[in-house]
Amino acid sequence: KLERKQKILYGFLDQVEKVLTGVEAVIQRAVKENISLIVEGIHLIPGIFEKMKNKAHIVHIILTTFDEEIHRSRFRSREKMSQRTSKKYLRNFGAIRLIQDFLYRTAHEKGIPVIENIDFDQTREKALEVITDKLIEEVGIKV
Image (cartoon, rainbow, N blue to C red; front, side, top):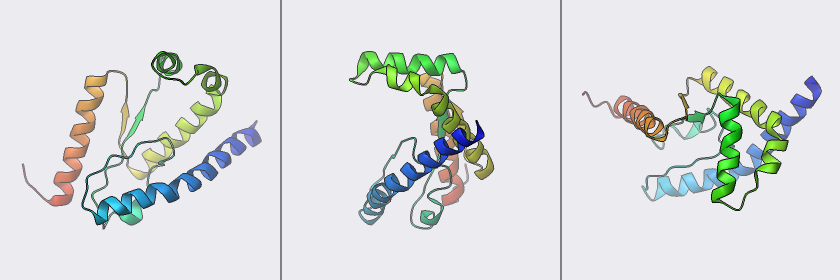
């Protein structure tokens, strides 16, 4: 069982490495052009952009759903609004939760905020609070 979990995480980290090349290029271009940017995705593991901290204000936030049933229902809801079927995700739900737990633990170790994403308005407010606090800290503005 441990070997299966390790294979899942190694496969995920291999994907992270492949995706990161493109994401870094997009961020570098935004920095060069002085453009604000939001990048989201499961492959953006906490701490991955540490080397870019001196070039840009980077605020990393993990949005998560701790409740497994709510998490499952999100795949079903998304299916109604997009072309993605929930079957593949629900079939691999154990692996998805394993990756989520890895991201949560890594965020905790790196001091990256984790926001439970249940209510859209509350999630948005908390994310804006985290972003504002981080920028105030980095820019040195006193409120």
